[in-house]
Amino acid sequence: MRLLTTTALVLLVSACSNKEEKPAAAAAAPVPPSASKPSATRPAELPATLAVSTDCALERFNDAPPSADDNAVTDKSKVYLNGWAANSKSDQAPGDVYIEMTGPGHYFVKAERGIQRPDIAEVYKKPLLVNAGWSVTMDLSGVAPGAYDIKILEAAGAGSTECVPSNKISIPG
Image 1 (tube, rainbow, N blue to C red):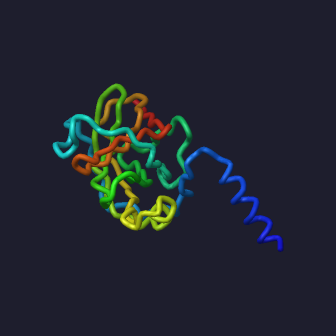
Image 2: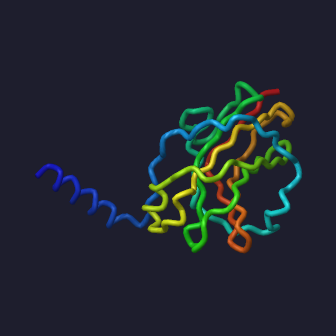
């Protein structure tokens, strides 16, 4: 009876909400074996104009939940990020993911794509989104110190998107 009451309450609350449901954070993905160095060159596969999306999340910063605003880097040689990105309006599998950092400099780094995220596929009712997870280990030793805004970019041809989570990265001098 208690389970039935709880389920009914959850359904009632979600039915009354105008906010789109976002998937819960998943367990940490395995750390990629080597660190990638960000580049100041925009990847050629990213169109000049990207559609704005809210279908993404940065879920882990150095194996911990990220701060809502500022995440300070303590070891510039290995910074680990993971999350998910998906174009819920598209009928194609997710494309390559890039992290864009904008601050005292402008940098791009390609993330590893294909981490299983059945929760994303289920929330959006799109089985093609099962591989929406991404992760990247970055070597920020060549990146100028300062505070950086983060964007998660998905390269998918005409369906390419940019998503701006509310997270920042601070790199010490």
